[in-house]
Amino acid sequence: MRAAILDYDAGNVFNLMSALEYIGIDPFLTNDERRLDDSGVIFIPGVGAFGDASQNLKKYDLFDVIRRQHKKGKWIVGICLGMQILFDKGFEDGENDGLGLLKGQVKPILTDYKLPHMGWNELIIKSRENPISDIDMGSYLYFIHSYCAYPENASNVIASCSYGMDIPAIVKGEGVLGLQFHPEKSGRTGLKILKNIKEMLK
Image 1 (cartoon, rainbow, N blue to C red):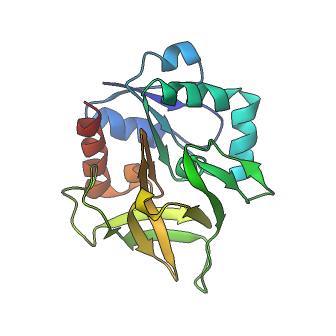
Image 2: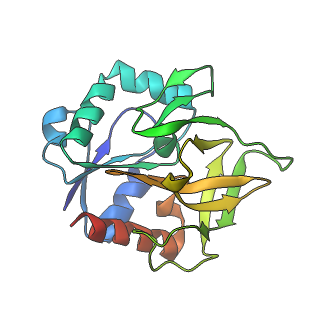
């Protein structure tokens, strides 16, 4: 399977590329719609602020490109900031548009704990769907973020974690999957989830 990793100046993608190669996916970095047509799935990575990500997507004219790819039936997988940009709007560095592939907004984490939420946290499984149908409750994954998604539809949240509040950790919609954690930095469990995504998309 060939996987496009969206190139929109929003973070270090090389660990993700290495992890995908390790599980037998052929990744390539691009923001060219013709090359996106050749992929089996599009990964949207991201490190940084929602506002910057939104502006970069606009700069490269990628909002409509991603929406067209999704309408064609291609899965869109967002990781960390890439998950957040799947929603309607974000309020980091002002109010900014997201892709609107999932209903909801991205706002600060409401907690008395230290921010950013950084490090390992337990996965709370809410729905035994792919790609976590065989992942153990309480598995640890690596997070780093100060903002989180507030989905309109609770059914979109198939796993969460606790950090002074219930934080969506995995969201899923029609042809859309979001991981708030970094699977490429989450050891064996992260690789297992990426392998499950590979199998889900076959």
